[in-house]
Amino acid sequence: MSAATTAAVTPEPGRSPEQPPSAWKARLGLTNGWAEWLRARGVYLALIVLVAYNALFTFNFLTLATIQLLFAQLPPVIIVSLGMALVIGTGGVDLSVGAIMAIASAVLARFVLAPGDGGLGASIGVAMLFAVVAGVLVGAFNGTVVAVARVQPIVATLGMLVAGRGIALVITGGALIELFVPFFKTVRLGKLLGVPYVMWVAAILAVAAAILVRRSAFGYRLLAIGGNRRASVLAGLPVQRTLITVYAISGGLAAVAGVIATARLRASDPSFTGLLIELTAITAVVVGGGALAGGQVRILGTVVGAVFIQLLETTLVSHNVPDSGARIVEALIIIAAIYVQRSRSTS
Image (tube, rainbow, N blue to C red; front, side, top):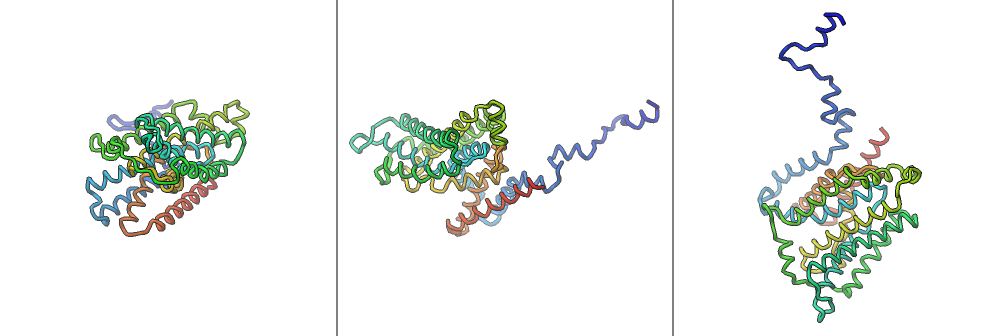
């Protein structure tokens, strides 16, 4: 190498070598341009804009009471959305999560009630355990129908959406059951470092889901099945077992959300618990960057998507928009997010 060439490639003392434009673009995630960056991370920007709007135009938004109230409302949505993200990652969808919440709530109520009131008189710990087990079993049934019977996920879980709420009504006798359990007060009002206990539960489950997806063989199989199910079968992956497990996890998470919702309501109401939460969960996953076609799970994006959707609903209610209007806005967001995904895949 000549001296001239050496001088050309060797930086002067005290100066760091200049990085090519592609290096800093890769670090910022701009390799495919600003449009792709916005598509992949738009939910974060949208959340910042929504928070700024509330800070300016929503009365008492930046108060500790409002933030703690939002934290108390968020956990069921986040927890259900985590299970939905796993299911969508396999290329499926779980429309039964709201019904599973109702079943878990009904089982919890029946176990907690005293024998004289038609219950089993069990401790709250045992009642919560059986409520979660009931959710896992319903989810495993959904997974079996999808994986073994080869029924389309939307059809299989739609059936459970209808039947599950009916099962919950049968368990409770078709009536709302009020529950006077001291532990529910702890669930509703308990805080650690100023953050509600239930929010800590949601955060722990989110970290566990992220580790499961990114650091385990199970997560690899989940994403492989969502990317190409036929290739996964030919590669010898346990497709059926993985799908059943994913739906069982989704059912278990929905049951946990059902227990939290019951504690907040202090009653089991099968007609109300988890109603339409499947729409919110799907929206959170989609706006968080999850692909409805499968093969991709973004836990952080899902959590941020859930926060965005819940905050959006709260904002609309604060500005006197009826609940029906909030649902229309959610539907429009889903359509927009799917359009963005489609344009990204065809570009």
